[in-house]
Length: 130
Ligand code: THU
Image (cartoon, rainbow, N blue to C red):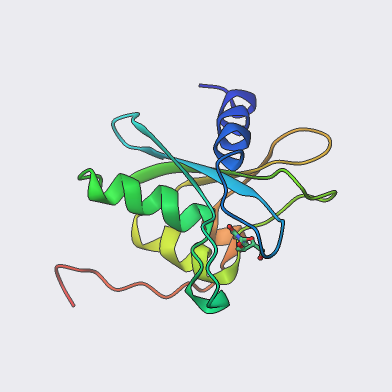
C-alpha cells in the first residue's frame, strides 16, 4: 500500500476524532507485520490529561488484536496547517512495537521517517531478556 493511501486512511480515521476541547483532530493507522491495518483517532476528556492520542488509539487496537510487531504508523492532523508530528509519548509507544516507518501527512505529500530520526537514543528494554 502506498504512503498516499495510508495517509488517506489516517485522514479518514481523523474524521472520527473526539476533540471538542482542542478542536484538533488526529487520525492514525498502524500496520502490523502481517499487513493488517488498525485505525484510531484522538479521544479527549473533560479531565484534559486523560485524553488519548490517535497513535495511542491505533497502536492499542493493533496490540489488543494480538499484534506485537508494527511496520508502519501513518498520522494525519487534518486541522493542522503544518505537518503534525507524533508527540514524544507516542514516539516512545511506537518504539515498544518496533515501528519501522512513520508517515506524517504534509502539505507537499507524505513525509516518511524512521523512529531513529524521531526519537534518537530511544529507551528500550528487551521484554524477554530484561
Ligand atoms: N494528539 C494526537 O492525537 N497525537 C499526537 O501525537 C499529538 C497530539 C492530540 C491530543 C489532543 O487531543 C490534540 O491532539 C491536541 O493536542
